[in-house]
Image 1 (cartoon, rainbow, N blue to C red):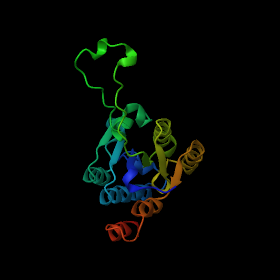
Image 2: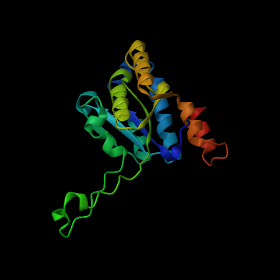
Image 3: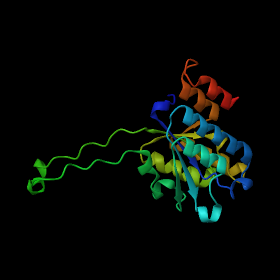
Image 4: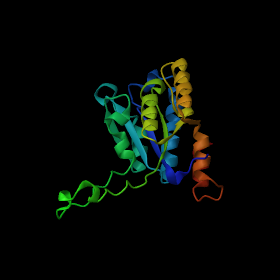
Length: 207
């Protein structure tokens, strides 16, 4: 199974100014998150950010926030460690359409009432990365799995304050059904072919 850019969304979790200096390999992790956001813009992949308790931990790194906005996305301020509990799932899938109102349809017996139209299909593959890997990133990824999204965790764009906690998160996520990938895997799977119009620009980001 390979990633498809047309079925993907990117979620970048809690790369916040007051948190990142304490993160193991934080500079490289943040650099890869920025690469992901810029690739997403080139390949028209919807991009979202989250910020845990921004009053306490500050906003996202300015360059990353700018890249999310350049890709047409926005950032969810949250207090739950699992961003799904703060409404991230609603951002990632179209809302359920309500059945048309009017007439006296509500007075009909239940078996004759018109069923609500089925939910529109959205982009089901969530490419996710963030900090801390064993807290907000992991809990959000597990929450998305529970919501029946396909979850792809970009390991070289994730970390924690300690390597041990980061690696424990990856073990747990793999056991729960998430796919573990790297930034370059995402790049070349989203491209699919060297004939892609954005190939050279994406290649410039990962080299």
